[in-house]
Length: 435
Image (cartoon, rainbow, N blue to C red; front, side):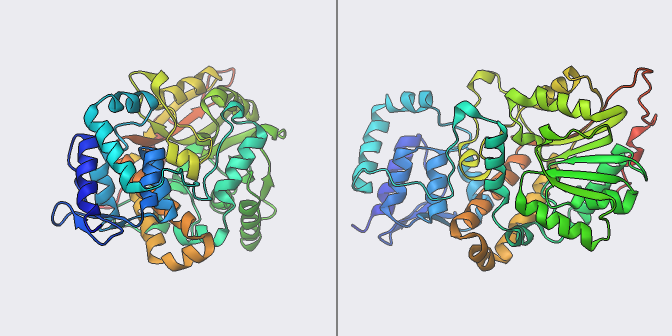
């Protein structure tokens, strides 16, 4: 057979009801598709079996992670062209059942089965995590999920994140600023919003590799407790704290935030952690943080948000990210987050969207990964490196397309007097843009 690519182009167009906007190069050396377009490289028939047994996003992701599928051309352009055919169509059982009622689709599926060979479901690549959906967000399952994502080697994360080791959206003074400057500015923005100064106690929930804790202690004189569920993060953060001579100001614990009992704190930062909490436990999370704050204390909740659905009951967790990146992670709309913080007793004082900032951050992380690709593969394995490249590039496009956002919500535990302690012109905490 020397025409697999042409046959695949025709079969996919028949299934999708539209021609593929990218080319295909098949395992037999054949190529077909629009001239000048990026090319999907289908390295073997197993890639087709992955798509047949898990149509849509997860099948494509499994083929990518396993190396059965590759891209010849710009990754962002390819994902952007495919977004309308894959990520924005959905892949729930009802959609697939409806599609298979179409005789044209059934004929195309039979053609793909013949091309794929023996119809045996390939084993998922080893990075995949299968979650027990009935027992989400217990202390045990949260610890397992966090360690799956973060305990893959600090050296691997240094490649992606750079010297700042900040794994959340940066705050860019200009698109051509350095990643290090933008991450410094984000940490400084959080500290200003929290009103940190010498003598104040800060709890950093999900402290990562200690960047926020070190910045708050070094630049603002705060006394900081940072908690993480990752042993590797904690070891790295403690070494960093010692290197900065801040052991008298910063304590790093391997501890669940639900087990922190030494409040009250004057401020709490939760940066890129609340996505792990889960919708069913979010009010409990908000109430726990409320109880840990002193009256007048401030919470800075920095969190990715999804767009609301017309039918919220139809919302499903992103299958690729849930299986390979953030097991058990859940996104909720900004309005839901604000409402639950208020129900827990907080007064929400400020909300700032950083959506475009995260797109810039993710593109820089992808560029760093690609620039040191061979070392990343040696440290994390080829599957892990491919997971990260796909996930970060796809997320960059999702932020750019306004499919998801990221927001900093500043809230106060109101004292009985009602005095919030907030400045009359709160936005004076933001440094002016250059020029």
